[in-house]
Each structure stands twice: as structure tokens, then as C-alpha cells.
Length: 130
Image 1 (cartoon, rainbow, N blue to C red):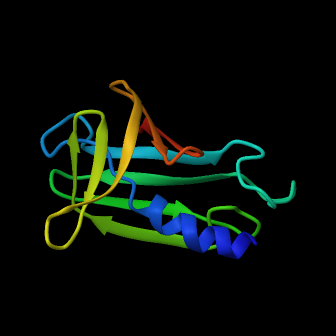
Image 2: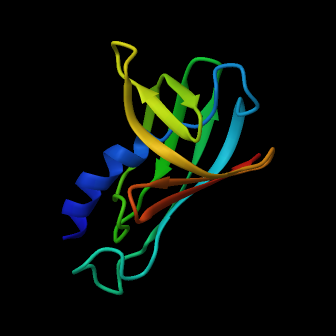
């Protein structure tokens, strides 16, 4: 069950993006992925609902480092992913290789040193400026 959830969720989480090409998001951010207890039916209490990593924003690309571990809902491995990104309104988009908008995330809160994102109904990402 953990591996299945990780295989489904991790690709989405690895594509989280935040910012605008010339906006205040450029630089390095600490990242914390988390889910609320009970959000995933059938996941045992021994499964960790939290994972840490880093987002490195450049003007036209974002590199996400996700530090998975055994027993983590989001995945057991450390992954690194780079992709183009953009922000429009209250949403963050990853761009495909054809420069089309892909997965989007709702910006729940945006401050100079902290950003709160939501994916679907039950996955949250907190970014804190380094």
C-alpha cells in the first residue's frame, strides 16, 4: 500500500512549482510535504505522513529535491527533478516539454519567506525561504 501511494503521489509532488519567472520565489527554499492523519484510507499508523526536501527556483526552472525514506507515504527514495514553471492567479503550474501547463497547485498562502501549497484535497507543501 505504501509503495502504491508513493508511486501515485510522488510524481505529482516532485512536480510542485511555485513562483513567476521574475518574481520573488527565486532562490532556495526548505520544503515540507505533509498529509493529514486519516487522509488516505488503509494507510497504517506506522506510515510517516511527512517528508522534507528543497526547492531551488531559477528564473525559468525549478529543481525539487525530495528526501524520501522507508515508511514514508510519499516515497522511499531521494529524488531530484527539474522542470519549467509559472504562476497565474492563485495557481502554480509546471510546464510540459511543449511549454503547456501541466499539474497545478493552489496557493493557500504567500508571504515573502513562506508559501503554503495544496495538491488535491489532502496533500500540502510548506515552503520556507532559506
